Length: 201
Image 1 (cartoon, rainbow, N blue to C red):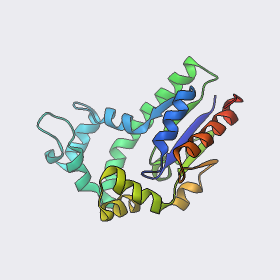
Image 2: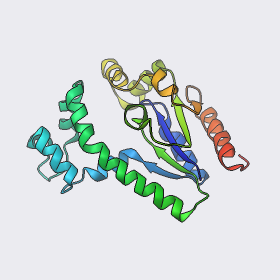
Image 3: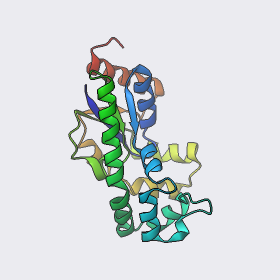
């Protein structure tokens, strides 16, 4: 019943690995989805965000204006820290509930926590394995431009805003090299699954 933390920098291919592990039978708990859930209209988290950052970060329909909030916190460590202090405790509680639910349903299952900000906020949690999707910054930079339509400056800023490659790799029990082809990434993911379960890839 291993609990894996799966992380990686932006455009590292982490989502590809998570999806493939789900296809193999893992339960994937998506941190980003939980963040969106705890920030839903009417939630205490959204109320706290509005109190801290102003009603300008709330859309007319009552939902969070993510672009407006992002503009407020991006490049401002103090503001980002304040936002994290509001959001992350609620995410931690809900993610733990989902881990417990998954293991109650299948004590021998594999649970994967797909968490972009592992190095930033959850590196000290008691994971059985930490899996890092790793591609060189230059490769990720090109992917952000080619696949997400960012400018070079935007791509640089997004990469720079996250933990460094060295900080992430220092946490890794397993590194999946995602700098090559998708077939190579999936082959490494299958090898990880075999290690976790003893199943044939």
